[in-house]
Amino acid sequence: MTIGKDVSMLFPDVVKQIRTNDLELKKLVYLYIMNYAKTQPDLAILSVNAFVTDCTRNPNPLIRALAIRTMGCIRVEKITEYLTQPLQQCLKDADPYVRKTAAVCVPKLYDISPELVESQGFVEMLAGLLADSNPMVVSNAVAALAEISETSAQPFKITSTNLNKLLAALNECTEWGQIYILNSLAQYDPKGSREAEGIAERLTSRLQHNNSAVVLGAIRVLMKYLDVIHSPETVRQLTKKMAAPLVTLLSKEPELQYVALRNLILILQKRPNILSHELKVFFCKYNDPLYVKMEKLEIIIMLTSERNVDQVLIELKEYATGADVEFVRKAVHAIGDIAIKLERSAERCIHVLLELIESGYNPVVQESIVIIKDVFRKYPNRYESIIAKLCENLEIDQLEPHARASMVWILGHYAERIVNSPTLLHTFLESFLDEPAEVQLQLLTATVKLFLKRPKHTKDMVVQVLQLATECASPDVRDRGFLYWKLLTNPQAAKAVVLCDKPVITEASSRLNDEVLDMLVGQLSTLAAVYHKPPETFVPKLRRGQAQAAAERLRQLKAQNKSGAFEGGE
Image 1 (tube, rainbow, N blue to C red):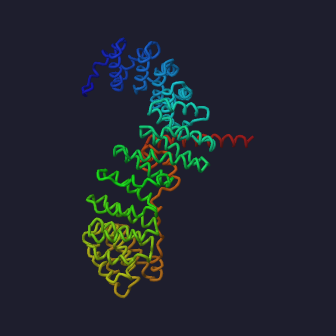
Image 2 (image 1 turned 90 degrees about the horizontal axis):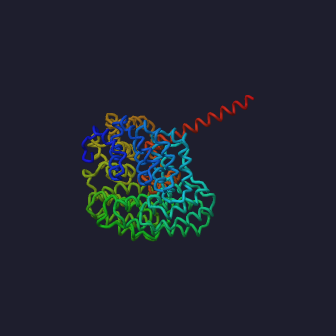
Image 3 (image 1 turned 90 degrees about the vertical axis):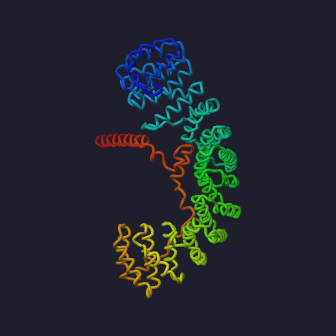
């Protein structure tokens, strides 16, 4: 069986061995039944009586736990009705090992038959286990209730009565039990600043834990409670205590570093000052994988200020001379992002970009074109003198689509300042139909801008590009071409539309909105914090759970409306 051979034909003979007193043999029989119960559901029922006997009458707690766990793992609907009585008994067993094992079986039964679990009162029994004297039982009960609440219309919530029990169990259960409890505490809403401070103080010891998941789980809870705490001094002390564990996560394996960095991006968006003095920790090492380097660059941009900008620019300039093209592009883009973020340091950033452009390194030049376009939009009429330097080091034939589109935008936007802009644009027009749609759209708009600014010498060019646009395969390009044909019949209206002032871009344009950010900070240490997406967008079970919850709310609303109508009728 373990090497992939089908031995299901032996099912009746193996089931006969289930009543053995040999523990090792019994484990093998249980494993066999779990493996083949789905394909032999009728024969699996033959073993039910033996399971029930082992669950309820066997004096050995290991066998009782093993039996109830095996019954929970047999995903056959015919057996579920036989599971309820032994499961209820095991949840009240005198041995904590049996109780904690039984607690894990409840969500498995709920997955097969939710109605049965609710009607038999298993959810209430799990809630009662939260007050158990054994911390492992408490943590497993929390894990089971959390799993059930993911698909239930009534989510599990911690109350003030069982809060202290969970906090007491937190220090004594295993690291995985601690994670379950911390995840549940993250869903708890403190009743005030004093309660939030008390819970936070008891959680700070988890920040020193060796398991990264426990550390991130504790930070997740603290990040939520910081919004409730009113005392600035307490907030300052807690953020200071969180800084060192976050930095320590970067000494782990690259995969854990990546997870930590993705979580840190969310934390820094919420509380930018938490790592303001730890910039050097995020400087890239020569042996860092590319995916770690890219995330470190994001955090470097977030931590850069007027105080440390010179140090950051020296570091980024070094990165921009590397061999990894993708990392080089990201480093150059980071320089431009800092220029947009820090107005007083923008000139220093532009100077560094010019030095890199003069090197002639093709990836640097191309990414510089893209980011300089954004700098021009952020600071109009301030740094246009660098256009000449840009054109000197430009090889149009080697430009990639994104860089070509940015260069065309610059040529069109500053057509009156670039003397040979008609010649340069004409070079792009020679291959108009072969260009990607993003370049075609920019060429179309840039040529119309050029015509509106210098109409005497560019009439033929604008007619040519409009004809090409209306013959283009892309519907977006064709639609814009027809729009410009119509618009140019009234030059004044065309100038008001095409040459209007563009909105100034901001460095916050890449930030998540506050509502999404708060939700993702509440999901720290989960996949949602790595993907930077709400969990329901990639977990189908959660979508089903939300649909069920919405249906339940709708049913309750309809019941209330009927009740109100009845009372009104009276």
